[in-house]
Length: 500
Image (cartoon, rainbow, N blue to C red; front, side):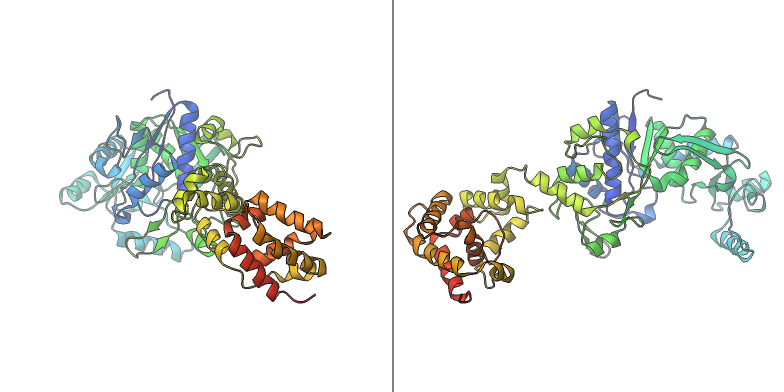
């Protein structure tokens, strides 16, 4: 076993990669970078019945978008190729045979009908069936049958599985980096199937064998795998191998905190739980993705990093390199992490402000002249959460108001405001420099000359021009509307506002 840290992310290509899986990949990546180790990507596709076309490429594309780059694995290569378990099928049989030869595993010939009947029998007596040290002696396997009968069944081609022989009495103990010591009695562990009748290994065998061969030192995975950890420890012991250090990450919870986050929660809440948009090849159903919804990769990475981990400082915005420097397993929480979508949006707003305005204008306002697009980006950048909102903001900005904010009219529309707007309407045609400072100077000058304070008029002027009592910088807005448009908007408003 190597002394340097080696971790892996090992998803199954059974559909879109859930955002919780992306967090697992991120934590593995950060830990490897922090410790100067290696991050591997392995595809665990032994369950061919659940294989979904396109899912593997989706995993690769999602990690690539976020910059979570494997040092070894699918798409990269490395000394332990192949990194797809389906391409390592012949390898696992030798390890299963080793366990058989050592008396640590056994053949089981029970049919699914026989096992169903056994379960029904147990349920009728108010208990649950478990294939273990108590029941295996009564079932159709190489422990209960005579050696000659076993040989005859195998020779005749009778289908069989290979099961782990779990010790009848014992305790599995291991120290989890996040949950500390875990103790499980072997009586609660099934004699799990290691090799299926089709010759493919189950997740449990392939996972342990591959982690050993690939010299994985730390297994960082979701809390849902914690019940499997004692079984995996038993497998390591059966082979006589040193087990890696385990760390089981907290669950991602619904935004309100009561229960595990699901795709249904996302659909109801109108937010994504996948890194990228996913089209189900079977149904054609499209699921939202963080990328297509307008989340920047930097915001997505920071949001995910803080779902169950904190740096112990006030800093909230990190580059990927800074996250790796700050990351540690010790600062991961045991409790589940609420999937706070508003926090994800906050991160996006912060990182959006750091983007190049010219690049945003070019990508999201391509129909506008470059200088005008840049002006609109500058005007709205503090008022959007997602970059694609820019086009909507511009369209809304250019549309003349048909209604005016009643609450502002009720509180601000009076004789001074009405007189002030009339003076402004008279002064605007004479403004030569239609720039923010020139417009502001002209308004200030005409109001001051007539003894009217700007504070009495400016919000009403905004309502007259935009329909709203609040918005982006008014002088820049007037410049972008253009002189003639402003004059016409003001004239239309004055005609509609009530008499005072």
